[in-house]
Image (cartoon, rainbow, N blue to C red; front, side, top):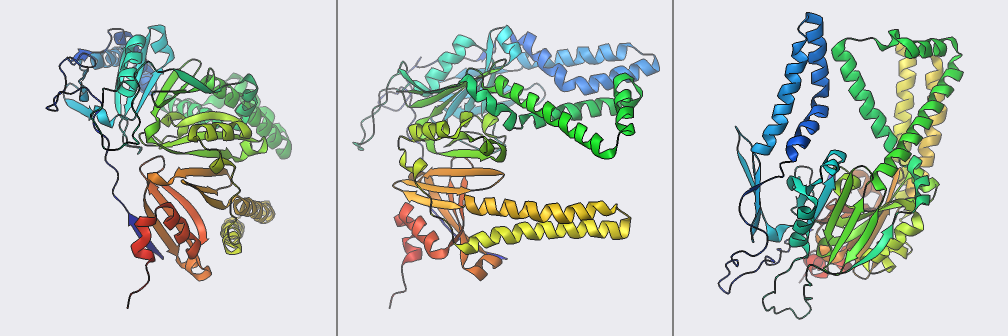
Length: 533
């Protein structure tokens, strides 16, 4: 039960291809990298099989157990050989070439596929080297194509030497041919590939203290648990029958319930903290953020697996300051780029949009201001939302808490649940819901500063968005049934960058229209004009 009003404008077309061309528009023969079809490095014959083994490990384990049970021990060996051959086949069936106009990749044996991307659509270049890659001196290059959804992985070249990957990155992002005359006098000249760099941020050892508060250890524990569970189920093994685990279970059973729960939680918290810290070090060791005069930002990081991401600043549309709840407790934050061509579906770290890992909040704000070239949108005080917006936070949180309490009472009444379940739920959930609502209400805020739209919201993860108004391609004004009853609306700016939708939730309609009209005046004029006689 909602009403929507949407206004949009066409997405601006990309500029001309930055490749050498003759006066007739044809590419200069031999310009750029060798355009002939080539294979990846032969060293990938060692890497691909190693990559396939972990992916197939549960299946191989199941085949090995099945073969051992039936007396056919060669089953496991046969499965391993097939996996190794499949990995080697990837090298023989993959070719690529870089022409003055396109980046092209062919792969597949039974199902042949060819991916071709125009070079003027290249937005980012991501160079990653896993541990096995580094042992043989290779890297994986991912060319971002300007799409930020979950289905677009860009163009991947898995198996280039380090010098070749560096040369390709320079060619695709830094190299600019001499441009044709333009009618826009404000368009800056493009520098060459050997532009100097300026360091904007570097990891400090003291930042490792933020590692335990990132909760990345939860992911590690989840992955390990899922893998062990799958392997154990396929092998039909009861782990509680063996050694230390059986002794541990017996010890917990003999303890009072409260003490056992406390010990399990304490061990779990310690393990999560240690794994999160280890994950922080592995992911961000050697972190550097630099700016090249060629108009790109470079992010390099990683201990075992190194990663270097290059972002064209012409595609940068703003930044996001992210403050998860635990990081806020220790005054920490992250800085994330809002740019076209960066994946956001897998998170900022995997998508390549991270500009600063968990670090002091003041440092994140400094990096954001430096990247934007304007400290005003980062430091500006935000306009608080109306009391109606705050009340909506409380009503929604307490309604959910009441439903959960009712479910616990129903379970006690009908399904003989222990009485303490609904008693604890009735005490804990309303208090937690009220605290959550209070924090969410306090986080609400917005501002318009020059060419920037600023919005802040969230509690478990508080986010402050700074979005350039020239990157906004449309507006959506949404009013649900309950919002209409209290005179509120949610204004959403649509853009081709980042999450693609950035909302200013629960503001009055007049404020929403003023924000939208101030950011893109010509776009909303037909909607704001009064009736004519």
